[in-house]
Amino acid sequence: MSYQEATNELYRKAAIDPDVGLCCTTNPIWQLPGLDIPLIMQEMNYGCGSTVNPGDLANNPKILYVGAGGGMELLQFAYFNRNEGGVIGLDILDEMLEASRKNFVEAEKLNPWFKSSFVDLRKGDALDLPVEDNSIDVAAQNCVFNIFKADDLKKALSEMYRVLKPGGRLVMSDPVCEQEMSEDLRSDDRLRAACLSGAIPLKDYIKMITDVGFGTIEIRAKRAYRVLSPRHYNTNELIYLESVEVCAIKDPMPSDGPCVFTGKTAIYYGEEELFDDGKGHTLLLNQPLAVCDKTAGALASLGRDDIFISESTYHYDGGGCC
Image (cartoon, rainbow, N blue to C red; front, side, top):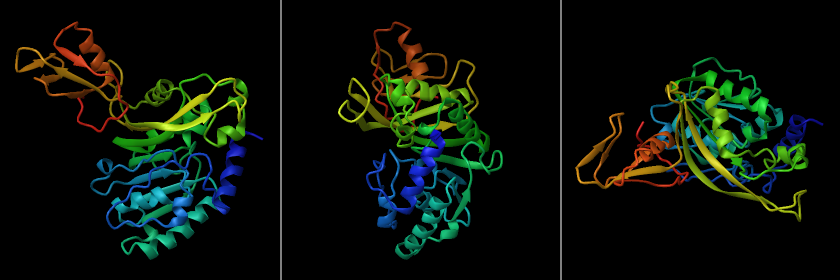
């Protein structure tokens, strides 16, 4: 059985018989005014973070969500785009698409503003999206891409890049792991399907994203996810996994490489009212400025004793230097 087959088997069962304890189930359930999420959607909450950010969703963006699941994030996205087919929900499994359709009926009962027709449910593969080029404002996936092996992950990211409009946003949540995993863990298709053994280091995850062309990366959140212990898994040490929320923007690639925001901040505390590095970055006296890692490195290399650069917080909410 391949890892794709193991994944389909696991989630086909989860579509028919919701499994509250399945893999992720750590996706925060944001409460928005006038939004009531059906219990069945919460029980099918198979995500490891959130891809729904109001800052991405102004002016009725066209939205693509890959991996429909129980429909919870599709409902949340529809909250921001209440147009016929304003949100495309994609899944490779007929059973999961049918579960979403049924759950939307329940959502209509609880939310007078919501119509199932706001979501265009489509059967399709993340590796070959049934979506036109340059047609999507916001694309998202939650705890799906970490399942893919390297070649398939590159295809999936390239497909997301293809369908996004210039300036469009790819919002994702996936587990990451900084420790080495044994080959036995990596090759266990069922553990990969359960969003455990496919996690890669954050720097490798970011490089996969920028290698397909995304010029700006925002690390918006990082939180504890799981541990793989020798008591339950084939490992000699405790392996710690975190979930990360990332926004990749289809900006032109800068000549000196991508801008990756990991929550670093620069603070100028010199004698003048401001510091200008002559490269588009102005630091006002004692006013923190979020900077990408590239700019943080450049400022640090100046060797000044009046500029402080913080460590990465892995929580970035905009307003940065680039």
